[in-house]
Length: 568
Image 1: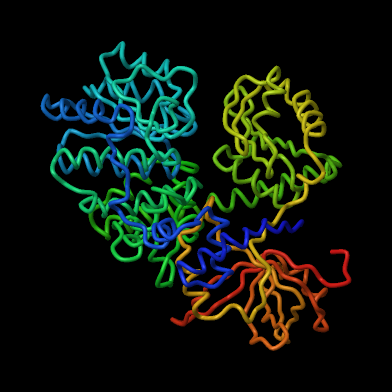
Image 2 (image 1 turned 90 degrees about the vertical axis):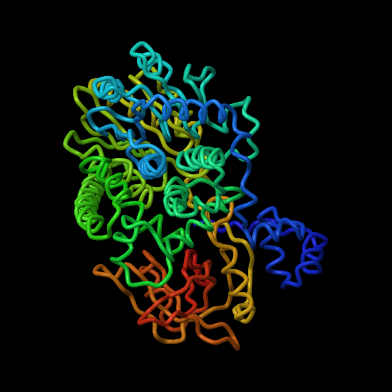
């Protein structure tokens, strides 16, 4: 791995924050790296406030959306809340439907089948609406490019309100209202909301119409925080405020469905990282293995007993997903090896029996072993379907565009995409994709990078430093947990490997005149023999908390190790 030290802010910027905040220069430097340069910006960062959320009516078409809903209530129309099958979509459907039902009873929900209907608004969903006398659909986390589907609904006398956060095309659908802050003519101040976040702005506007405030909507923020974490949106601005308060709800009084998932873990406090790695995969597993309706059912249950029953099913789906993921990853790695493709610039693998619901996860897993743009194909009907994942700074969407002659359809963005093609074109496409990647990727892009915030001495990590650093949470894109590096470290003598295959490393690190600090390196067990004999090394790591038997202690989470006098 290559270590890249972030540029250090100017001494004037650091000194100003040290002066106005009375903090350590290292803390000041970390803040400036995150774009926080004034007392007011620091105050908003450390003390997020709900009253700093923007007026929802600043979003284009918000008044139209509220008015259309009010008309539906008055006319006793049936409303369908439609959302995607992933975490952002299912949390958004749970949020919108449960809020609307506090006002009005004629509300139904619809999640498309991942395999029968695919992503986004579907004709089947619109037909369901028509067959059930529904005249208004609220679409969440999808719809911004569904021009033909909205026209199909219009012909049946069904209106649409679209709440999306994806980039629009040149034309937006002819819906009653299109809420998407990424529209070029939308002046909403914050552009990075997730789909559930856009849905929250709509219920905030509806609540204001009824003389309520955002304080009345706090119980819904566990759903919004879960979506923010799962959808990997920036933890800045409104997302930071919503995630901050959503985590409070998650830790103090979550809805029964989320509580049922958290009950499996013996810990007193859950971070956004816990939500990403412990809660989100289970909610996602419903749509991957069975149906997204299970996720909505879980998140809208009123009693813990009901929620626990659904959670048990979802946990079983997730166990099945993990087994499939492991099995397919092993098979794909063998295919790469057997085909003599370990030195290629891209990974393209295919087997017709691989489960479509996990190929995106498998693509990410393969990148952990072979760090390069990766496509995993499976059979889907009479076509092949693939999930694409990329590496830092390489635009896989552009690479697919250069191969579009071979594709039936494709969509996505820089780091993730989906595509379909005819089976007869698979090998030609694979050859062309490798050619395109080879011509456009640099050697540097093929080496994983660790961005390091600062070099520090272990003695700088005291209780005050840890207390302030804790307030940098919640972490996520544009506010990642700081990564430090320290030199001249050695193991104090208790180093060991963990895991069934001895794949993890556990040790206590010491620097001259410092106290030992417990450290864990997941997937770094191979360093064990290299560090024997108290060899000196440098270490890149983040600061974490370890909870064991009710006791909480500081722990370093190791990102990488460089042994002195070693080519490693």
